[in-house]
Image 1: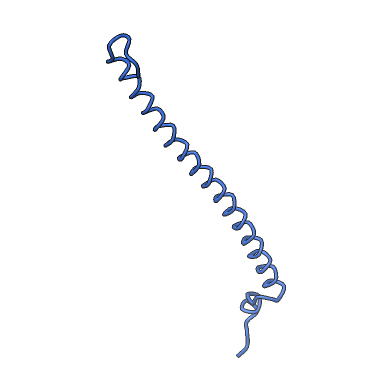
Image 2 (image 1 turned 60 degrees about the vertical axis):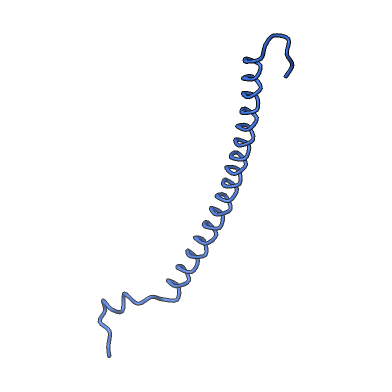
Length: 78
């Protein structure tokens, strides 16, 4: 079976495959860097969420104490 010039020009050469391999390797490195950055961001978000829960709990405690003080007769203690 013989190839037409058009078919021959579409064949991948070793250099073409090496170039594709290098491109894939570079993409893998970029994806790895991106995943590392996303992991760091997720950890920061998780920390902020934990701090928010702690702050809400503290706010609720303060509000409870303030409410008790507002409904307490003069001279009473908390």
